[in-house]
Image (tube, rainbow, N blue to C red; front, side, top):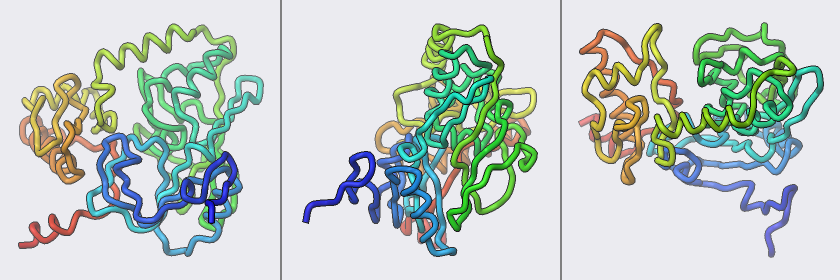
Amino acid sequence: MAAQRKGGGQTDADRLRHAEPMARHTSWRVGGAVDTWFRPANRTDLLAFIAQLSPGVPVHWVGLGSNLLVRDGGVRGVVIAVQDALADIEDLGHGRIRAGAGVACTILARYCVRRQLGPAEFFAGIPGTVGGALVMNAGAFGGETWQQVESVEVVDRSGSVRRRPVSDYKVAYRQVSGPGNEWFLGADFRFAENFATSMERIKALVDERREKQPLGLPSCGSVFRNPPGDHAARLIEAAGLKGFAIGGAVVSEKHANFIINAGSATAADIETLIRHVQTTVKARTGVELLPEVHIIGEQAKAMDEAGGS
């Protein structure tokens, strides 16, 4: 029997897969298989899927797969990829923009700049989606996501949707905490109108990123948060770690706060290198670097057995 087509021209096999390798869906190109991988065709498809999940099943949301390290042993439960289902963006007028969690931050930046709304060009420096930016208060070039948020739309495990004000969340540098067992469907942003910016400004910022960061190579973006009054990259470089490698994972020579998959890295290589950088910087400077990257999943069995012997 031919596979049935769903919304957006997807087949059932496009939407729902079992034992799906997460290396296909992360910017580091590593990671074991997830039990169930779901790519909803649209918002209705997404909400219906969430509503039928068993309450105890772990659920993880993924956008572009940046800022995410999936361990080699894979992920138990479900991964939901939202870049298609929640990709709508709308001008509400009076400086307000509604963007779904699956909208790429670069698209949001360009959308706002074309309408002379800002500050928004900093979103072009965030290598992920609106959903991921909301989760961690992502930022670039001096701007932060939640500085522009007016309200957010969320869904809980029953599939019920509600809109929440910013006051329901505690927001700090690369940290957001709020009601549990909910996920961001999108947000309403408020920007200043007639803001003096241009597409040339976005191009200049992207060119600046390209010059300073190892774009085009498998990485997650910045690995560590900048400590107060300093930069993680400076501390890592000062510790002599540029170019340091464990297996196929390498501290970038171009930007020390990037870890590159040189082609053969495992998630274990990357995670071990992250811990080594933390330990070395702490020993030499007294500063404890905190990861920006979100690590999920289980260690490979071979590593577990070796660690326990």
